[in-house]
Image (tube, rainbow, N blue to C red; front, side, top):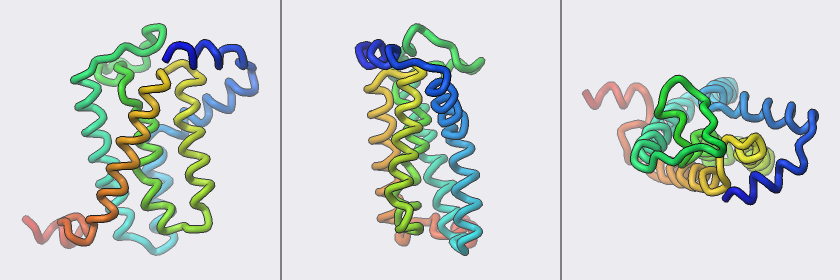
Length: 171
């Protein structure tokens, strides 16, 4: 795992640092969710916007639970938050957040499918380049995120989260 970080440190440059810092900033799961909900609303996919919110909340819960169980330190023991929970590395919340919405977005915006994969992968890679995560943290986050998104999308019609109205009727 450390060999990836050491390898990419050989390519550090002000340009790459700026690009990957920007990707990490805008790759924050909160920003990804806001951009996704706006895009879904503008494309008249309001029910899918609710699914996006539910997907992100679910994957954040799973990732935080795993972080609590594993308690893996970040490379070079970097501290990224005042909240101790967010300072654990495994799995990557950024990678999980970027990949959880891929199945939904690729289904709605089919022409942009490859672009979504490229952006999600670049966000995940930025975490390794900036030495916030080990390679395995990012892979685990991406797998957890994509799997959660695919499962939720597959069962969306059978679950209570089809729409906010149906969710409200459950209670």
